[in-house]
Length: 363
Image (cartoon, rainbow, N blue to C red):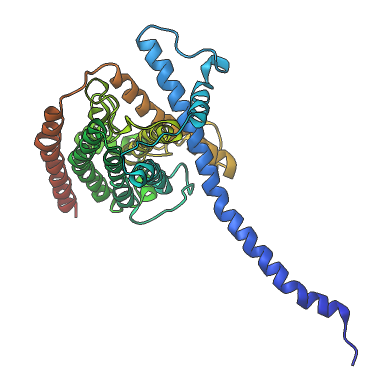
């Protein structure tokens, strides 16, 4: 019996080729995730630089100018400094809660980016419950803040953690009701479907024009969820030293700093997706490609245009939140809770009822 050596080599090569395909499949799973993380990191660095430059312009001072051209590397320098600082643990605190708290906050906010579409078919997870998943995941972050405040064994930290939870609960309900109104208008909870539902009539089809009350309530609730002025009660310097992050130093303090800007960016992106048409920007009946004489946008160019339009709209909202910080004074805790429960909640409920009624009439 004569055995052909080429046939034996071919048979032996099957397991190798299958294992290579599995390895390539795993690599291609992680490539989009790593790309998104790198993009988010760059976006946060740009936000920090913009906030310092805009704040300096409002206060008529120079701002960062030495770290890199126009001071653009100042945020990177601050992050590197925090990375090499000593990481201290409170002697009588709960070390496990103290250590886990910042990680829970950052991870819960990072998971929200899974359902954000940056362009046409440019989303990590196009889920039918996209906006509902975002609301569910974002409600985990205050638990991490409360764990951090309690684990610090410090009255200022614990007060800051309690304030963060109370503020999140108060403003999460109006935020959710506004999102429900958008889902009713779009007949879907998928972020991609919501954007495509707004693309029919150009910028006149944006939900901003159909839901102006919901848009205002959503912006106010988003600022409160991000703990930005005038809603930064959980970390009020004059009252609580630094709130839930009083006892933190080094990389853990840097995680809280990162989480605040990640949350601000994700809120800005959701304002863009829900109310400003996402990656679409066109004059009614005339799309952007036709303005430039392009009949059909090719892959990479179209993707780049979509990302640019989405980020431009998101950074417009960021500009509003940064200027608000230096315009309005901080509210008292009772004023903050009254605004959430006595004003925004009834207004958002009424907005949801009006939206439901209009949808029923149009059937």
